[in-house]
Image (cartoon, rainbow, N blue to C red; front, side, top):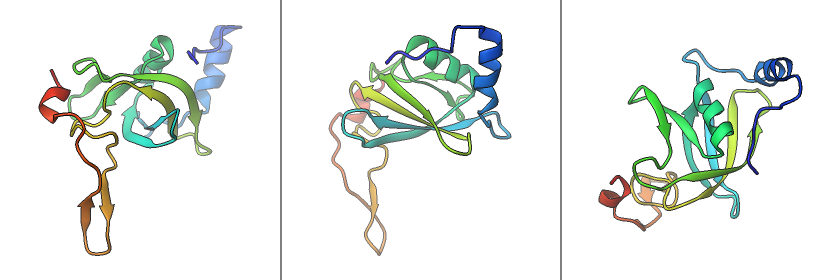
Length: 139
């Protein structure tokens, strides 16, 4: 699904659409990327209004990089893109769920999920193998 902002009476609908979003103090929403085919959580990132608009316009995930202080077009350097299929908003309006089709790996560590640490009762253990050399994730 390629999502776009509603088109009829665009100004009014856009205001209503964005009114439900509750951006935090830094102007960000949590954005959880989930594999549309398997349901697996791939990563957690952040979106500001510009990142959300770009995601909806292009159909590919764009986030806000807190460390770089700029838009982060997922896969712009690596080719490991996320095609948006469905966008959902949580009940509080402060978190988004992006159901995406992942090309390549989502995690800079070369794993299929950023959630690869597992608690075993005594500490955090790596529970997933690297599938792509991390040096090749960012070309």
